[in-house]
Length: 208
Image (cartoon, rainbow, N blue to C red; front, side):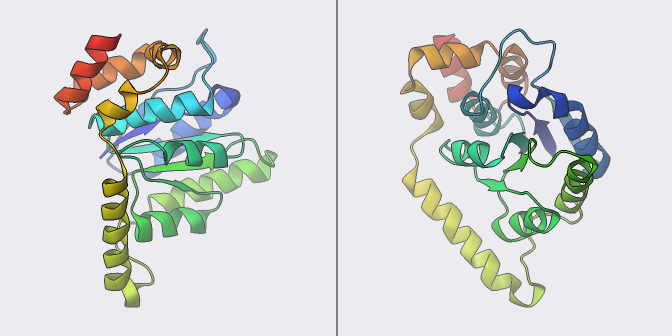
């Protein structure tokens, strides 16, 4: 599994911690750090990061995204407006476990600005540890796993029906917003080099 780590510029100070924890607990997965970094001149809001996370997932460049903002809520809501993204809000270890076991989405958002004493860092580590403690999508509780998995499939089917194609979605965005997300060159380059959706890559080439 390829996992992308990317968070809003408001929390650049937590990037290394988030990347290190995901790398530590995600077993044999390949983890790619897209920042945001303190060294970057551009600053990216949670809205802009959600669009970049969507490009990474919709293109097939990565399989899973770990992201966040100050509260985690805004990023989760923004991500869930992007085609092919199903993002969970995981403020605790139990929330992380239940989301990937029951809902089996492809992105999670963590609160990176709340209660950040030593307790906040310890909670983040336990949350990421629990997130990757078992293979995703097994259902929970185990005695009702089949019913839970059936509901998860229905949720994803309903979501697919309600969404437009990624190219149509990104093509409908304000040109200024599109130009801004294209400035995140590490993401755009990675999509070109690793994405499998040629239509989406063609759209990016035509609109850069």
